Amino acid sequence: MQAQSMQRPRRTVTRPMCRFLRVQEHCMTQSTGSNPLSLGTDYETLASRFRPIFREIGAGNVEREKARALPYEPIAWLKQAGFGAVRVPTEYGGAGASVSQLFQLLIELAEADSNIPQALRAHFAFVEDRLNAPPGADRDKWFARFVAGDLVGNGWTEVGAVKIGDVITKVTPEGDGFVLNGTKFYSTGSIFADWIDVYAQRADTGADVIAVVDARHAGVRHSDDWDGFGQRTTGSGTSVYDNVPLPAPHVIPFEQRFKYQTAFYQLVLLAVLAGIGRAVERDIAQEVRDRKRIFSHGNAGSVSQDAQVQQVVGQIAAQVYAAEAATLRCAEPLQRAYVARFGNDAQQEKNANIAAEIETAKAQVIVSELVLRAATELFNALGASGVSVNKALDRHWRNARTAASHNPLIYKARIVGDWRINGTEPPFVWQIGSGTGKV
Image 1 (spheres, rainbow, N blue to C red):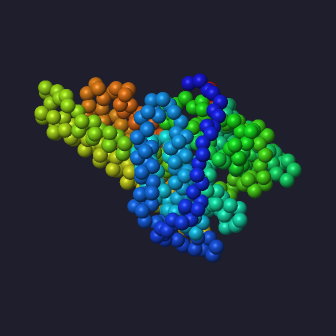
Image 2 (image 1 turned 90 degrees about the vertical axis):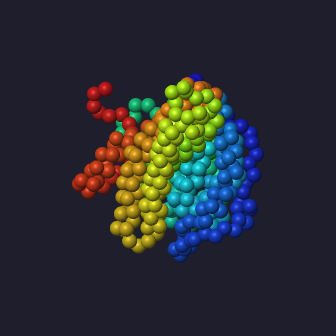
Image 3 (image 1 turned 30 degrees about the horizontal axis):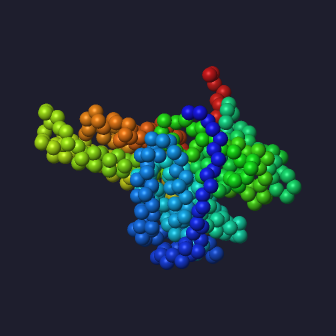
């Protein structure tokens, strides 16, 4: 696929601040001084606000897939509805959803279009980071931005033959603030974003930092040059930062980043996979119901009554059930880690963060296998017509394989095994880059 510079289309997005503040929802909150926490709300009430949008997104999914059309409009719908603020406490105009409830929503969204939750992955991670930040005016300003509809993209992966540990993207002091220069790839979601969460290094001290960049600044350029065979409309690709100014509060020491971030990022991908699984189950059931042609050596006068076909669909349904259950189960320790962040028990917080890493790693190994198997086995219930490009059923396997290829699961299985055998704590942050061995 040829890389091309992408210009953001002109569009009007109604900011949902006033509407959001008028929403009266039951929400359990826990206040720690001036720091109310998001502990959950009534899920059906919350989800009912977004399900009509999910249905509309799903209606256009196959056409976007065929055309490789980026989902600017669907993401604008979600912005207007306040989807990006569901984790913000109700006291600040958000929905007060728990971590588990956020990921339930992302699974439902992924069933409609698996690309969009991944495009929003960096946004929800930055929201989570601000939820873990100390109470204060700067944090409250970010809450207000989220409630107003602002979205955050990402710029973490360096481009080229960069050694592990090296960061080429630099933040340099200038006047009362800083300037950012560098190039990133896998900039998922940044092409849709208002802000970008960029991993960089200070040129003066060598300290690792997060630089929060205005995505609309003239020095920020995006290219939609992601050439993967799946998840093709996530808005990934190259981002270039050329002397982009940063106010001092937008340069955040990396050591202040929320501790369960790696588990959180992985859990978004698990939600993507679980949603793909639900889409597989939905589509194969519909295909079987609608199919008129039968085989002479089949078992019934209609495909829907064929016991072997029913078994295939039932097996897929069971695999998807297990994948979704595992995904939601491993969201629980992330919520505990979030609550423990503001407690006074360091050991409890550490235990919750370890559990978040280990449980998401366990889930990654099995959820990937279950969904990939379901996305393959769906064709066993169909004939050759099932591979028609007009049906685009192959998108499920391509998208699942792409999501499952992030953060190789073979290493996650080893980490879990080392923990179970030797009690070795999992790594909370890891990097990718050029090695020192033979090429």
